[in-house]
Every structure is written in structure tokens, then in C-alpha cells.
Image: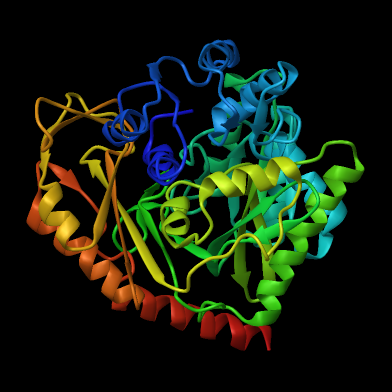
Amino acid sequence: MGGGAREAAFALNLSRDTQLYAVMSHKNPLIVDCVEKTGGIYAVADSDDPHTVLDFAKKCGIDYAFVNADQPLANGVTDILLSSGIRAVGGTQRAAKIEWDKVYSIEIMNRVCPRFTPFYRIVSDASQLEGMIAEFESRRLDIVVKPQGLTGGKGVKVMPEHLPAYGDCADYAASLLTADPGGAVLLVERLDGIEFTIMGITDGEHMVFAPVTYDYPYRYEGDCGPGTGGMGCFVDSVDIPSFMTRSELDDCHAIMQDIIHDMRSAGTPFVGVLNGGFFKTARGIMFMEFNSRFGDPEVLNILPILRTPLSDVIVHMWNKTISDDVISFARCASVVKYLVAQEYPNPSPEPIEFEIDHDAIDGLGVTVYPASSIRLDDKTHYRTLKKSRVVALGALADTIEEASSQVNMAIDSHVRGKLEYRKDIGSKESLDAIESCARAMTRKLS
């Protein structure tokens, strides 16, 4: 379900050993190719709508459904499929609340793992704002303002980059409350340090952890500009990234396992992928957020190094047989970068046409994942859609720098059109800055 680069990566993997069916909002070229290659069927329809997906699944007589995008999960697509006797893997609407309700998420975290929870306040009425903002100011804490629902990574605003002063935080929070009467806004201390993600594949009880991914959420090089859904990310080739310690990684794994156990004990078992966002800070590991599915672009790093076929992973989740014995990952560096329109994350006034030389890019060992774009008459000409990320390119190599250079070469030499990307993702300069930050955090912690 879905038509982004993440779903294109799923389709590419699943097309190797399944008959593939897909519901997507537009004709993602790679998904279409994968479906047709396997003799399956696709529908261009609303993949966020539970009844649309259910009707399609029944018509096609599918064996397994993999629900992994945020909006279908929040809308209850998994629930309606399960209630109709279809083997659906992905969080139920109640379980996926850990992503789409940030207040619910941080309160679970504070109850189960308070040591790793940042200072926060929940605002449900604008009259509370003055007092709560004053608490942050008295503690000399910058604020992150988080809307309650799904925002695709673009609704969260950070002080001082997006909100220069405490008054701006109050104004933005008040505007969110006005836009969502009866809702709530989460105010959280801004965490300084190294942000990273760990994705855990779970059957509701057991969990296997994917390698750590490092995401670049800001629009421009040097981590400047507005937040986005993610401009790219990398995975290192070693068990423990150089910016972490074994103890810190163990802390993250324990947090996620404790959350899964708590949800199961509370009668809300989570089956699917729990995506944990964390910070390495001067106080140690701190929680940032949970997502209820494979991240995008993080999964574009993870799927190429997944040794186990994705179809087997789905079956193991359904059969509750998840273990390190049946799911494993190759030790390889992986870098992914998104191409976007100049205006992104704002909408573009007009569609943009661009070209991709697939044969030349394949020759460099780089994979193309179309996202918010459609293919025109031949296999090289494309046109952008909506305001989202356009296309992602990913590569594997022995080192992060090598993989980054492969992607840069592919984009600079074989993609033509008015699109932009972050060349610094996975660069030596960026890696050195991360290392320097890690050393500083370790010294402060000591």
C-alpha cells in the first residue's frame, strides 16, 4: 500500500519470490514494473482508505498484506483486513497510536522508561501556555513544539532554528490548538547531540533489531533550513556505529523491548516494525519519538542489506517466529539521498520534468527508487507530482564515504533536471562533524 520510494523498495524485494499486488495513489514506475514482472495486479486508488484496500485484497485473493505507511496504519487498514480473515502484518490502529499520538507515545515512555525521557509538558488549552513556557525558560531549555497527529516530519518546529524565542513557541503552539480544537500540543526540551534511528522487527513479543541509521532531516547542507521527511541517511558497516558505545546501543534495544512488552501486557500487542528515534546526549541516551513502521528513507538503507527475503520476514511476523536465527543483515555501508524540487518542503508551482539514465546508474551499482514522480513515454523521462520528495538513489560499499561518492556521481552525471539534493550526506566532512560531536558528548557525560 502506497506509492513512495519506501514502497518501491518493498516491491523490488518482494518481486523476487512472490506474486505482488499493490494499491497506490499514483503509478510509481518501479512498483508497476515489479507487479507486472510477477504477474500480479495493481490499482491506482486511495491506499489510505481501509475499504478500498479491503475490496482490492478480496478481489485479488491475496495471502498476506503488508501495511507499513503511517496513514493507512492510523486509519485502521490493518484492522479491517484482519477482521475479514486476511493475514495482515502491521500495527493495528490502537498499536499505531504510538506514532500518530505523540502525547500518548511520550507518556508510555515516561511510565516505562522515565530515565530516558526528556522534560516535557502537554498543552490542551492556550491558557496553559504562559505557565508551561515559563517552566522551560526557568530551566534554560530550548523547546520543540510537536503537533499531536501525523505531519510527515514537517509539522515539528525547533527552537531557535524555526522558532527564535519562547514567545514564538507559544504563538506556534496556540496556532496548532486553534487548528485542532480539542487536541493537544506536546512541548519537549530540545535535545542536543546526535540523532539516530533503530528499527525493530517484532511479532509482538520477540524483536530483531536492524542496524542503526543516521538521518539528515534538514533541507540544506550543513543541517540548515526547515525539517523534512528526511533528505537521506546512512548505515555503517560495523555492529556499533563509531558515534555510539555498546552500552548506549544496549540501552536503546532495552527501551524498545520494554515498550513492546508493555504494549502486549496492556492488551495492545504491536506486530510490525517499531521505529525508535533517539539522541546521544551529554546525559546519555534520550528518547525522541516512536514510529509504527519502517522509516523513509531509513528502510532504503536497511532493505538492501537484509539477508532474509522480506516475504519471509512478513511470514515470521505473522507466525510469531521472529528471532535472530531467521532474520539477519549483511555488514555493509549504505547511503541514500533524496532528490527534491527547489521549493521543497513547500509545494512547487508547476511539475518538473527530469531524466534518469538507468543503465548508466545501474552500472555504478546505484539503485533508483522513484517516489513522488511518474514515468512519461520512455524509461528515462519523468515528471514530478505534488510537493513530496521526488526520487531516491542508494548505494552499498565498504565505507560510508565510498557509498556517498557513488550516489553523488550517479546524480551529477546521470540525472538531468531542476532537482536538488544534499551532497554532504555521508561525506567525510559530515562524518568528522558527527565524530567530533560524539567525543564532546562523551566528555560531558564523563
